[in-house]
Image (cartoon, rainbow, N blue to C red; front, side, top):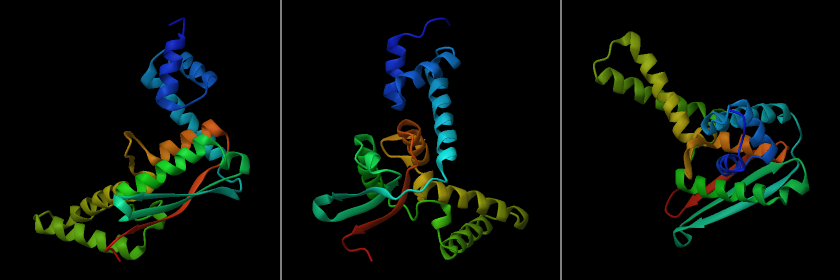
Length: 199
């Protein structure tokens, strides 16, 4: 495919938020196929994120979200490398969206590493018991339990979760896209979610 039209670039930018030149490059590499170009940009975002992962993040923002007439609230801290990025509209919007996402999905941690050994062991035992209850042979019970545990991480760890506003991407994808777009290391450092009546 020879020509990449401005309309195609606009469409890809709308889907990914990537810069014009990055969109043109992706469409050229992918012969004008929008869906393949989206994947191309996502992989590029992951590569950029990995390259930047060792850089210190001493700036950032604490964003809040209050829902249900004050019955549910979230505070989230998102870090970046410079004060300039902390004031960037895309960065601030990402932090706002994270606070809303956390309010909606109630994750147990940011990544798998944040889930306590106690919770993991408890979940594994429940899945083992369920498999045995269903009459599954002992030798595949552990496999079933591990599969269900991986699903638990996907559903309950923030970075693994599907983004509530676009279930086709995970929070990790969204974060990597922002890192690629802004060109700085960014991380979700911590969050707390309060709900009236919950301890």
